[in-house]
Amino acid sequence: MGSFDFHSHSSFSDGLYPPAEVIRRAAANNPAAFALTDHDTLDGLAQARFAAQTLSLSFIDGVEISTTWMDKTLHIVGLGIDPGNNELAQGLHQVRTGRVERAQRMADALARIGIGGCFEGSMVLASNPHLVGRTHFARYLVSQGMAKDTKAVFRKYLVPGKPGYVKHSWATIEEATRWIHKAGGVAVLAHPGRYDIGPNAMKRLLDEFKSVGGDAVEVITSNHTREQAELFARHAQHFGLHASAGSDFHGDEGDRVAPGRTYDLPTGVKPIWELLRHTLDVDVVGAY
Ligand code: AMP
Ligand code: MN
Ligand code: MN
Ligand code: MN
Image 1 (spheres, rainbow, N blue to C red):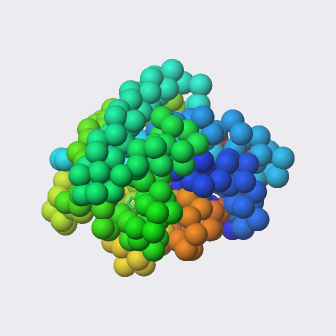
Image 2: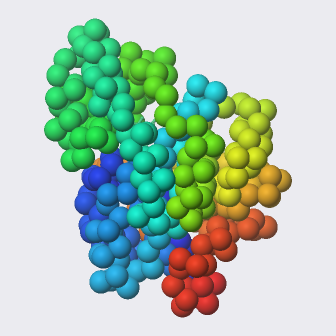
């Protein structure tokens, strides 16, 4: 029995591959179950589910919602959601509004330091223009020789304090959690180790996430060291949250992340699949 992978991206947001190709690559790693969780859109799920069925891969419908908390951008993953749910669809529509305008402001900011053409260049790379984001900017700037890889572009230009970063307000964590619950899903705080938040603020965040109905913490993610995984496992236990695992696969060369392959959860945590039994295939549940 392989591990499970509940976090991945297709070209419907900022992944490089279309859903069917993400699924094909994931299935090759034989996970127990797999979720596509594109940023702020459900549009790739039908294609992904279809591809998963043809390969007998146990598939979970997911989404990763952009939120703002204390001026920081946080991501909340929704798993086991009904892609036909109206409240979730409307919420995501509201979150997407503003991405294109933000992209224009980012391009203007970069133009001011002499880097032109970023809006057009990034829009061309976004197969889904409404979902244009920093990853497309990063890929465009790499293609222009501005840095050796996307990670270097983020470091130099696209994170807070750097010239291409502009402020933007996404959903609140309460809204994101509510929309996910309305759609029958569970809400997961994604890659907590990536946020630039001190230990006390992190505890406040986990407390607040729990109090707005949050269900789980992503303990295993390609962004975490083993030590961070252990830390967030203990946090999950302390705050009464379940633990999730995901590759956060985007397909970029050099990021060494394989879809469908994650590490085992640390011992003692409550695994998130306990909350997803209703959406998982019976044989998968039996295998655990
Ligand atoms: P956006 O939603 O447009 O602000 O873009 C956020 C996305 O950028 C994330 O989902 C990641 O795919 C990517 N990202 C954020 N920070 C980094 C980083 N330091 N290095 C590489 N990719 C990053
Ligand atoms: Mn992304
Ligand atoms: Mn994320
Ligand atoms: Mn992600």
